[in-house]
Length: 311
Image (tube, rainbow, N blue to C red; front, side, top):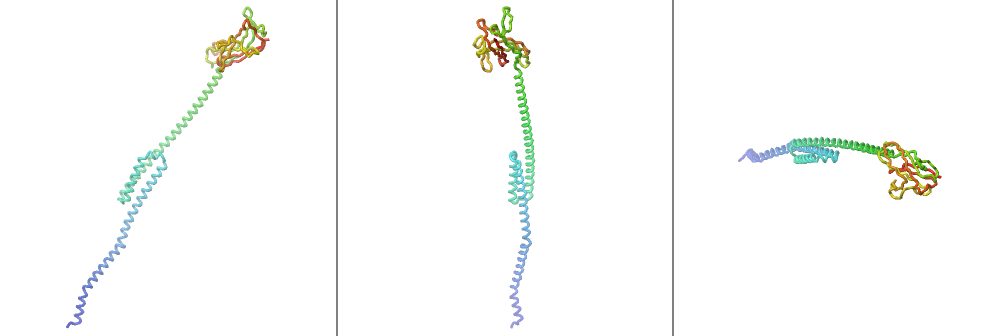
């Protein structure tokens, strides 16, 4: 017969394996808890910090790229149409920016992207320098063009002034380059048998009408022959004494053909000259009483007039 002590010992031996497993499971549960606690509170922040660092670097690189592109567009807008002359350089900048954008989005190596950004900044600076050089050259060209235009305008004004002065001078010369007739005198004369003349105011004794004048000195006139025409108006008739009505006894003045009474061609050499024109009354005709108007002309101008009266 077993004793109570033996029974208890046997019972305890039967329960020992279960106790061992409980202990093992407890240890495993503790290890799992500790590992969960470690990764939950210690390992996870390390992963989060690395993630945050990458995100910050990406954001920083993107901001740097955006600022560079914004500045580039601002420069293009500032210089306007002048930027079209650097379109090739602009294309290089935009191509590099697109490549960096891809690298940032693919989370490529940070240092590689920084190098690419530094290279793009150098290209952008070269773009600004070239643009500034173009601007200065363009400004200098505009200033030169403005100066050339101003010089041309001054020259044009000087030319116009000189031309006006020449025109005025020519006008004064032309107005001064005219024949002047002085001491114009006309009257009736009786011709004696010996050929001498005697002035008379009697119509019945008048056989010749003479007009004398001094053709004045004028160095501005081209030397040469000059025709002087004398027209003697018959008193009260409106007609002119003339040897005929054809063109052989006429000249043109101011577009109008006029008959003349007498004509004389003078060799003019810029010095004063005494000139006398005569009209002989035909033997079958007689002078009439009244006031005679005598006018003198050259081919180009009116010289003057005189008058006399026969009783």
